Amino acid sequence: MTFQKFELENWQSDYEQTVRFNLADSTVDPVTVADLIEGGKDVERIMSVPLYYPEVNGERGLRGLIAGLYDGIGSDDVLVTVGASEANAAIVDALCEPGDRVVVMEPGYRQVWGLALNRGCDVAAFELDAERGWAPDLEQLRRVATPGTRIIYVCNPNNPTGYILTEEEMAEIVRIAEDCGAWIVADEVYRGSERLTERETPSFVGMTDRVIGVGSLSKSYGLSGLRIGWAVCTHPELADLWRRHEYVAIATGRLDNHLAECALRASTRERLFDRNRTCVRRGYELFSSWMQRQDGRLTALAPMASALAFVRYDSDLPSVEVGDLFRRKASVLVAPGVFFGREGWFRINIGMDTGYLSQALDALSPVVAELPNALQR
Image (cartoon, rainbow, N blue to C red; front, side):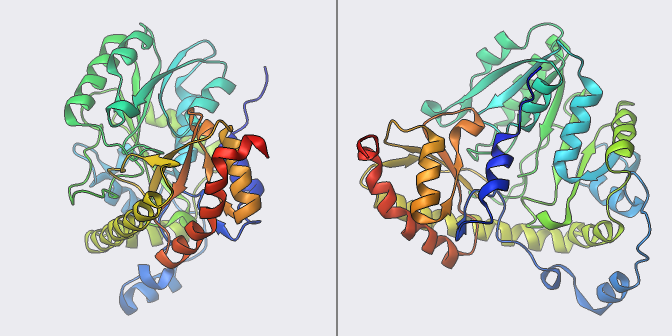
């Protein structure tokens, strides 16, 4: 079996340190330790943390705070992982056997897609439809989620489009999963990054018994350097994820656990979400204004959430070649759309510092102007 590499992460690993402007990432401008902690007591507590192993499934205080983000979840229903990426990997390994049907949302973050292919699964997709504002094709989902389907993977809010499922769409996805016997794997790392509302996106957790919610401090908190994620599940299968966690990571970092507790305190969490939404809103205004000056060569639907814009470009060039042109000629890194299952598009980060973003967009403008004639180069 040919190994399916993680093309998006491979692209970022190869190039993100070689460009002046990295807009291929998917989080907001990062939070500093000084921004995170509040007052002398926090400093004293952090400075006194013994750098020994934490509880293998995550410090109990942190698991309690994570549990409080969901209805009907207790601290023993939480597994703290090395980012959402470890949670997703453990889920696919625990739930799937070769030949199992796995259905993924596209365009989408293709980690579960690639993990399932490498597991020997039969992978199918259901699409978000750009012509309908990125609404999901639920009739297609019902067709591809055949009886015995093992996983239906959703990312809500979506990466890369920023689309938020309606509660009616969520309910229909639950009905389809229950009808075919599938687990819902709900990647919800962008909850809290809503651009148009202060209301946090509802979770799939609690809507059906066979659901695993995946979260992280990387995206809506601006704390990707902590490498703290989690899986929540009321089913006994959570223990199967824990057993895999012991093989791969043993545990997350103890200091990371304590800093994560600081982040998830109600007052700090609200402050971080306010900061995130400010970054997203300012960034989109700047990006939208810039895009309107590109003479129709670029189009994008306004994201409902996330620090991302998914952009269609007016050229026949494959998206990897477009990304390569941006990298070489403007020293700006974006993420090619093919890495999300959609050719003719690219993903760009709009949540970084506005000065940095403005300079990056200015550098892109002359290269974008060349795109319609790029085949003649």
